[in-house]
Length: 172
Image (cartoon, rainbow, N blue to C red; front, top):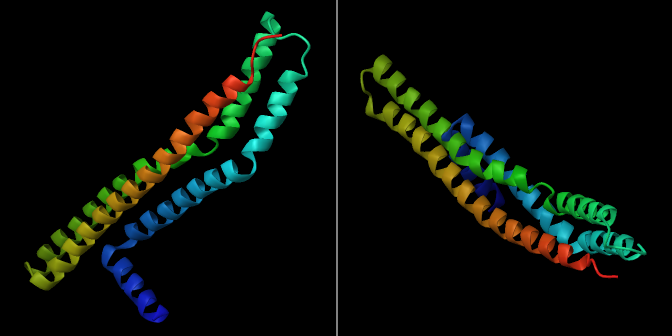
């Protein structure tokens, strides 16, 4: 059963060409980063908010210009930690369809090469068309799945930054 799945995956990857391996690696990286952000919110985020809030609450005065600058620095540092690898995740989402397009171009080159060398042999042209369509489909599917994951992470990041800003009150 596992062996059959392995053979099916390898066959699919060979039909799609070398670009399909790049799409698979990029998708793996993208989802690893998405899961890292989820793990961050489950484990480290509360400690970050607690320590930054405690640092702000330990100040005796919070209304001066310098206090505002310190508050802004705390918010900026926390926002960077909260955002983490989100820009890289979004870049991966955008790169997936581009790699699919690269696979399309390389597959079409195979089709044209087969037409030039074998005079339009249908079997060799079909392999090139397969090599052209599979990476396109795979890139789009990877991008859509990453878009789903990155949207959830982005909403969580925006919400947590807003909540964190509200934690650092200026009264006192």
